[in-house]
Length: 74
Image (cartoon, rainbow, N blue to C red):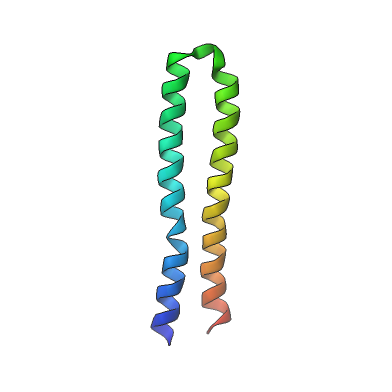
C-alpha cells in the first residue's frame, strides 16, 4: 500500500515538469517576438507573465495534491 501511495504522489508532482517546459517554451517565443517587434514589448510581457502564472499554478496544484496523497493516505 505504501508504494502505491508513493507512486501516486510522484505522478501528481510530475505536473511541475510540464509547467517548466511550457514556461520555457513561452519565454523563448516571447523573446523572439520582442526581438522582431520591440515596440510591442509591454503587451507581450503582460501576456507572458499571465501565462507563466497560470502554468505555475498548475504545477502548484499538482504539488499540493501529491502532498495530500501522502499525508491523508498514511
